[in-house]
Amino acid sequence: MSNRIDRIKLNHWLNIRKTSLDVLNDLLSKHLNYTINFENLENLDDHAIEKISEVLSVPKNKLLINDEVPSFIYNSKKQIENTKRPIRRGGIHYYNYYTLPSPKGYVAPVLIDILCPKNKLPVLNNGHLEPAITVSLGPNDIYARFAKKIDKDTFLKFRINPDPNTNWIVGSNYYEPSYCLHTYSRATDGPGRILSYTTKSHIEDLFDHKFNENSFKHLKKNLNIERPNRTFLFQDILNRGYDLDYISKKTKISKKKLENFFKDNKKKLSLKELTKICNIINTNPADYIDREFKQDKVGKYYYDYKDSIKTIRKFKSYEVASIACSARDPDLTGYFIKVKNNTKKSILDLIDSNCSHYLVTKGKVNFFSIDNKKLNKIKMKEGDSIWVASYTAHGFSDKGALIKISDGQNFNYLEKIDLTNTYNLKMTLKRGRKDKVNWGYDTKK
Ligand SMILES: [Fe+2]
Image 1 (tube, rainbow, N blue to C red):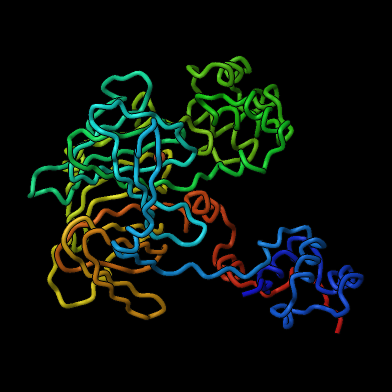
Image 2: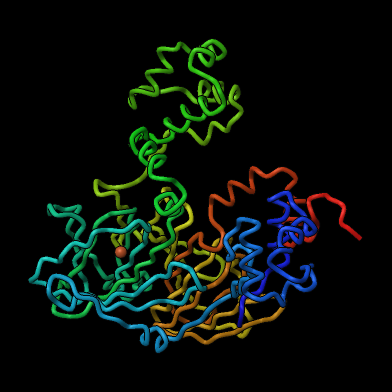
């Protein structure tokens, strides 16, 4: 199907550009022999779309109709197996990759067969920007390696839970930060497999196109690598036209103390002092508090399967246990689920703000979901996977186990912070969604 302009998006960009349809038509008149209006938008040819995007200085894709994100996407084990592709590393057939279902344009999780034999030291990759959660799926233990130099943190047995009573908690798991090197080999003569849920990075646009070379170099040179929050506070003081003399005078914090805080990471300011500064520059002190993260020396946060077992708890109609996650990526979280419920009723007891991937690891389960009052039911078995959108009521019955991993690709924590900051949220939610109202100008009759 050819491209079509989305009326709502065009209206939004007319509002942003502080222009009107009449002005737009004037500007287009040398290129088009007809005028556009909200009624004929859907029939415009590519040339007209091109010109509108030029005149408004907006990339075309910001004006075009998107397919709506589905409520769920189910892939059977067979469909997932059809995505199998090999990769070579270190001169051998090293992994097989399989992709789990995701909406168009999303970073998708993968299953990886580990083929590197146990007697060969696994060859490190180069790491990647996208953070990930990885779970050992078995059937056998494998080795995971995280650095050139090998020690107890950088080379370990990525174990499978052998206990039939708790093996719905399939195996060990960990959170992997950006550019953490990682590689795997077999630890036995048998096969091993992992689920690697790599999610979108929120900072990729900074590296990609947002900054010019000069700006990026400056950021890199001036950023306090251990405490970037302090650089941003200092910069926000300057951004608003204040200097430390003025801040010191108004807060009664000595200039020396302020200078030391920005120079030396060991020096502290109390929350009260930070709040005083933020009151002057009118920003939120929480944005500048020093962060602490649970991590080891290569940055990962590791749960042996026994650590996950310690977190077993009842949740709704299920038993669940945690998968490792990190405060570095508030959206990327997961848990193991045990389903044991032979009810004939539809179960719709789960609803999350984040979208989720489920992989059935044991038995068989019925998946239920409801969207726009339509009830959906899918029978799932071991190896099947389903992606579920944000705020979609869903649930499972029958007898089996799943791994659930959620992320922010449908709704992320930065957007949640922005909504928290939004004035007149009720009106914004109403107007922002399908805004057909112009920003306030008279139209020619
Ligand atoms: Fe990876």
